[in-house]
Image 1 (cartoon, rainbow, N blue to C red):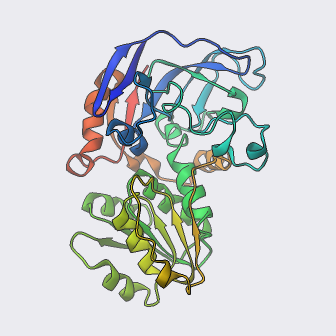
Image 2 (image 1 turned 90 degrees about the vertical axis):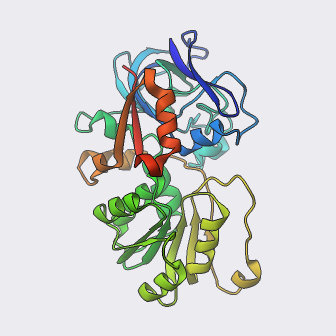
Image 3 (image 1 turned 180 degrees about the vertical axis):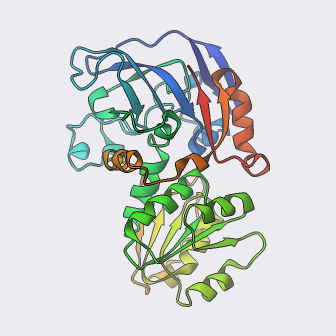
Length: 345
């Protein structure tokens, strides 16, 4: 089968690999139909995760058809169309019992990281009964891909951890795919003001179309002065959705006393945490990796057409073009790229 393989810092290649096989009775083999590229994949590509074994097949988001199931799999059968969750969960360890599936003792984020991932024609999914979701006929295949990771990540780690409430003023710093997912799912909770902050005018324009009440281009305007015009004392919820020191710094400076700072971005270097200024502000600061415990709810919401998700998909490539797709996503601002769909079938 064809698969996108990580061969070292800035080295990926589409290669021929052996078909995956059932390893444990709880496994399923999925014929991948569509996948995508995540910012985390770009981090791996750039050598951000030296712990990853050379030769690893990348990717942790996608949909496909069940090809084969282990003898212990009871919820799925050959031919079922499924969403592949970015998080693998056994369903029975102490963390799974707390719905902290991201910390599953025999799972968590392992696809495309600790085991071979979904940027391939076929993939093995451990703990299939807890790590796959059937795709309703009311959801378009491309939209279903967004339910693998970015929608639950934005909702759980940005919106829920940020404790967004009716009437709140919220700021989303970074409106890439995950930040845009925060923007969309925050509207479940009726904040009165949604401020999108980014350096990319194309993304800010889309944010406005998808529900942002205000936008700030941090490359051309003073963010702090602009925030004061909108919310003089600061925002109730500041959501960091990039994972770099500059965006963290914006969040810790714009959140008001008693507010929430929810970190969603994946950080690779340390940040300056101004505890000498923040200790007195009665803040709640949260971090986290998505648990996907809200995925079933999001599937129902998407099925009911609660989101205009098609606008998030900007580029489409075939699996044979996936190396080109990585370059487009790496140059997202220049290419006006948001979410890229890879057609595998």
